Length: 99
Image 1 (cartoon, rainbow, N blue to C red):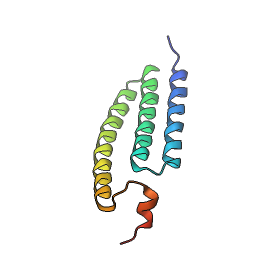
Image 2: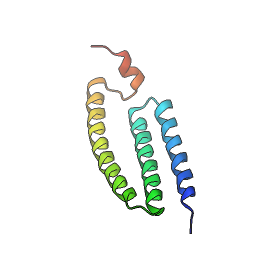
Image 3: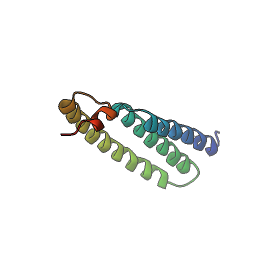
């Protein structure tokens, strides 16, 4: 039986990696991937909480999955519109262009 603390450590590591990606990358797609990694890390922690004896973790994880799906679809639509208008997804170049 794997202790719940191991899941917490894995979730914290994945969340830290996702946060590092969000803070260091300038590509919009990579930033979205970092956000998704952070959401999946929170799901791991919720499910570890569920393993500890409460069913609330499953409900929170399901809610996070729904929010992540909605976030991914809206963010991808925004990235496609930005690419169509600016012909780049590099956030530094988009910030420099003023209309």
